[in-house]
Every structure is written in C-alpha cells, then in structure tokens.
Length: 287
Image 1: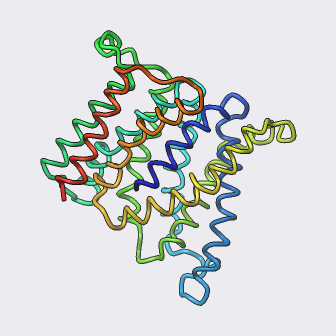
Image 2: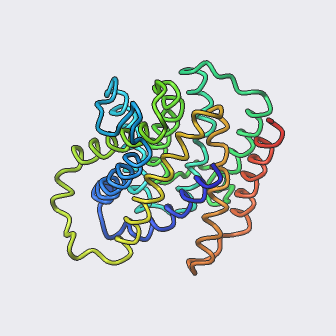
C-alpha cells in the first residue's frame, strides 16, 4: 500500500498536466484498454495450466461489472476534478476514503474498527480537510469547497465502497485473474458511457504529455495499482488498507515542488503532516 500511495500521487501530478488536453472519459478509456491488454499478458503467463485460465468464463460476471462501474465513476470524476482544482486538493479529498471505507466495511463485511483506528482516521481526516481548504481558516469556516473537490468526492465514495466489495465478491479466484476481469469491467463501463467523447477526440494531435500520462496510467496506475489494492484488500481490514493514502498529499506536495510548479504554504504543509501522523498511529499503534 506504500507503493500504491506513491503510484496514485504521481498520477495526480501527471493527470493535472494532461487534463487540459483531453477529455476525462477518453483518457481513461485508452488507459484502461492498454491496461487490460497488459494484464491479459501477465495473467496468461501466470495462470497457465491453472483452473482459472484467462479466457475461462468467470463465475457470476456481474461482480466485475459492479466493481468496474465503481472504478469508472472514481477515475472519471478524478480527471474531471483535476481540470478544475489543484492536484494537492484532489489528493487530499482522496485521503477521506479510509474513514468512509471503515463505515462501508462495517455495513458490508461486519468489520469493526478499533478506537485507535477510528481516532487515527479522524486525526488524519482533519489534516486532509485542512489541505482541501488551502490551510485557510476563513475558507474552512465559510465552507468554501470548490466544484472540483465536490465532484471528486462522489468518486471517492465509489472507491470506498469498492474496497470491501473486493473481499466480499472474491470467491477464491487468483488475484491476477480477479484483477484482469475487474479491469475489463471498468474499461467496458467507461467505453460504453463515453463512446461519443472517444469518437470526437483528435488522437493524432494530442501533445506528448498526454501520451506520457496514458502510458504511466495504463502500466502503473491501472494494472499495478489494481493488483496492489486487491492484494491488500484480501489481507487487511478495509479501514487500514486506505490508511496508507494519508501519504498521498505529502508526496504530491514534494512532487509539485520538485517539478517547479511551486511549493505549498507552510499552513497547508502542516495539514499534510497531520495526515502522516495519522498514518503512523494507524500502522504502528493499531498493530
């Protein structure tokens, strides 16, 4: 999940630079199409000779459509928000997922988070909210949340439901097999929803930053991150799985500063550090 947090943080920074040049649905359609192809090769190599061969029809295929729809909502709203707000704010909204996941984990799996876990989630969530409001007490008191953050919050709710459903829906399938069909379901939902935008996109004249983002998203933020997330979701309580996302705002701040986009204010940095403190408590004390 540390690797997952790093991959997601980089995708926010890259995505914010590609967002002005391509529609969010078209971007996600091509990254998932490539991601499915890459995962198909990996699954074919790893599942050779096993009962769960890649081309075998999955049991209860509706599971992958449900998971795919949730991921489609998340990724499309993510890139819509990146065209409207900063990657730091979008990354901060993402860190609200652990607290929501704890609630959905209780509702869907009966998992009860310990008081230490809940306190750490509340502390880190408070730091995330501070970053969302730009480290401004006036903005916080006036509840001046932007359109981009509000849109992405909807996607984060979908992502929070996704984590417990992975554990609930898995029926003993190998993770690589389960990941492939989940990616396939996500790609199918996005392509059906955004067929018009995909057809209108001038693919031949997209700038290099878009293709760099597409390649990164397809390999790392699609195939690798899905595998890591599903691997962790099968082995950790859902509240703890996303606790590692508290690293994301701090990583984004460092990435944005090193890229020359500018360093954030000390007030916002303090909020990001609070989220890291929440992670430390969650990982160390909760054990």
